[in-house]
Picture 1: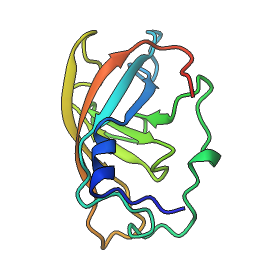
Picture 2: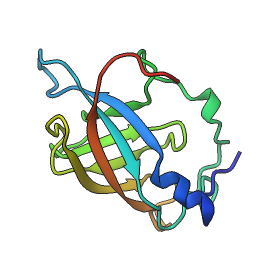
Picture 3: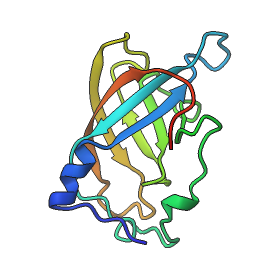
Picture 4: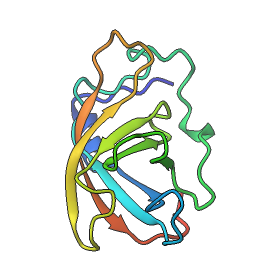
Length: 141
């Protein structure tokens, strides 16, 4: 299956919601912070095959975290403002940079995102992103 979001489908990405649970600090005893994300239009459009990925994209086969959410990590990044998301719709990863990984409840923060591609010679898809806190707990699939 190929994912290519252009034209009317690009608008769908704008309202796409992805939620993940993130630890505040690697060795923290504080509860996790869960965030929701909404992405703007991707430029160039997300296209799995055009990004050099050779394996088929099958979101149904994507593993989820124990609470039903897509995977995310902050451990593989150097900077306190970056989150790597591993959503079913782009399992190669999406890097999100925000002014803070822990916005106050009720706040929405804006940042930037780029999707990882398999071929480094290609233009990397980029988008704006908004993030906000959401309740942690089991996420409905």
